Image (cartoon, rainbow, N blue to C red; front, top):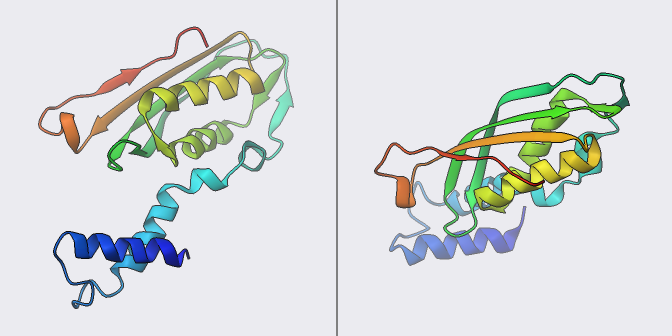
Length: 163
């Protein structure tokens, strides 16, 4: 575990007026550091690792759709979570990708500090290059639990164009 990150979380606890040596908070900096490393693990993953050679030749020309991929990410402006679902569809052009790999690609990009607009574009661009130059349709539906949309029942829906 990153000791520097743990010390930083200890300083945050102090900064909000708490005593990090208080019972109940003693191990919190280490737990928070591990949680933050998990939430940002996408920085330590590569497409090669995530896809693991699961791209296959195929003469299929029908649309392939993976729906309701759960997305958990952190807003790069506030370090607060946004959650939602992502739906990915593509028309193969000689290659298909293992269906579970699509969800893993979504997760790899989501597990980085993000803005939703970039997350959508990164996923679409990756799939365009890897498997389908004809069409990739991506729909991201996200909800905020904090920040400007926290008091409203709002959903943000993003779909890339011109990818």
